[in-house]
Amino acid sequence: MLKLLIVDDHMHLVDDMAESLDWLSLGITSVFKAYSSYDALEILNEDTIHLVITDINMPGMSGLELVQEIRDKWPSTKCILISGHDDFSYAQQAIKNRVEDYLLKPVSDEQIIGKVRDVVNNLKEEWEQVSSVQRAMYTFRENLPRLRETFLLELLQGFRSGRLAEKLQNYELSFQVGDTISLLFVRFDDDYTAYSPRDIALFEYAVSNIADEILSDSFETWHCKDEHDYLVIAVKLKGSIDADHRKELLDKAGMLLLDNVKTFLNKKLSITISRWGSFPEDSPIMYRDSIITLLKRIGNDSECFYSETSEMRIAAGDQFQTLVSLYEPPSIPQLLEAGRWDEVQTKLNQLFKELSQKYTSSQEHLMEAFLSISSAFTFIAHKNGRSIIDIAGDDWNRVISGQMFHSTPQLTEWSLRVLSKLKDDIESEIKMSRGSIVREVHHYVEVHLSEDVSLKSIADHIYLHPVYLSRIYKLETGQGLSDYILQLRMEKAAHLLKNTHEKIYEIAIKLGYHNANYFAKTFKKQFGMTPQEYRS
Image (cartoon, rainbow, N blue to C red; front, side, top):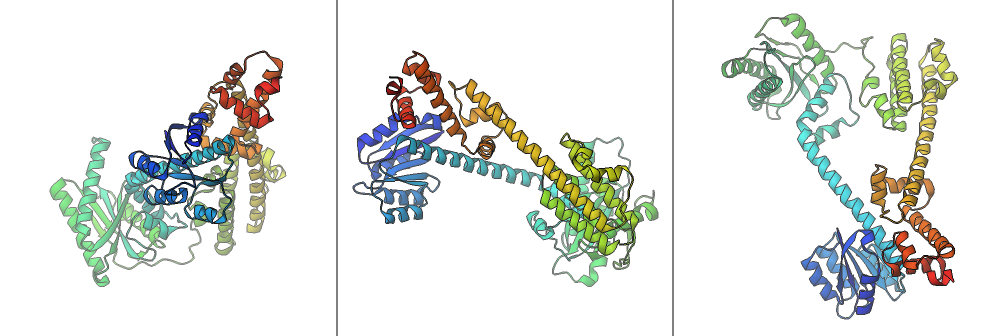
């Protein structure tokens, strides 16, 4: 757990702060004491200290010099400075050294506890973030091959990424937007019904390695397995290779792959090589045409090799192409489920722009868009336990009555209006849910007031992350959770003192204070008098 170091040349101040305050309740398990900056440096050299509270004015090395030394050697250690002088130059130096707080004497126990609590919470958040990033990076590296495969398959199927160049870089791929590429398709012709999935995967892995080795001298490669169980390899020439010879080089590589798999693995393949085209714009049509070639020209024949002889030529203005923006990931249902309302509206606007520019006279495309949007709206309403009719009202009655949209502006107006109603309804439900969380917190605290009612114990009880619970509570009540617990304890303490004959230390224990002196200090801070004075 956390370790604290208190530094001051006045021994009695250090001893009093170390021994009288309830550090354990803040998660601090070890408190070290130093009566000079030099003593403090010795302790820091020997142990891992998470937080230092130091006075500024000390003989020899000052607290400011100590903090500078800590910043240089132990940058992750947090520091709180205490000064008896309101000197602006001290404050400037403290800011320069990135201290957590700068307190002026006299400093109350409550001030120190409050500042230390803030630092502890910040430390825990930092550790959680570091841990999350490390886990995410490990998971990313472990799944990078699968992520690359999925990404290529999405591009071949026509899905567009809004940050394509960034994603290519993040996935450490050598392909760039505008590259000239070809697609090499590998179909496995043997009967694999008797093979286990593991054996098939090993064979596919072996073929991929052979293909990469053959192609690596002249081409950059990127491959995936598609829904037809074909191995699809995207290839582009390496920088030093003459583009005039690319078809010849790729055809030779394809034939060599057929021969090597036959020789070393004793397996049969069929290979199709697409035309050359621009990445990623031409990739979906190259993919589609090659699939047709495999299905129609090669058919059920085995050990076939087919290579397109001409460059990529795309027919312009194909009337019945897919609505690209509609099916481009992330989908409308995915965005709705994540509550990314602004991105839903952006995606809808992109769809309506595509309809207006490319399919102004196509009722089929308008119907396709409407059915997808209305289905997504119904999905998110039902997922939140709501009826879409109750939310959208007359706007949905239009759908039920069969009234159709005859123009993109009509569909645009209707979609954005229903989206707004959905957003308002679901966000209202979320706010109500927060209220129920607060009520559950209050009930738990009241029942367990004599026990450990730390943020972690409450969060564990209601199955929420402590940081998230703290934010929800503050957002809903305007009050920190620790402030509420303190307020409740003091109110109950006042009631018990006035209405019972229990001893003060018994009341302290009943309210979760195992240190009667600390309870008395806290009570006096709250009411301006000791518990005994209040009772009298």
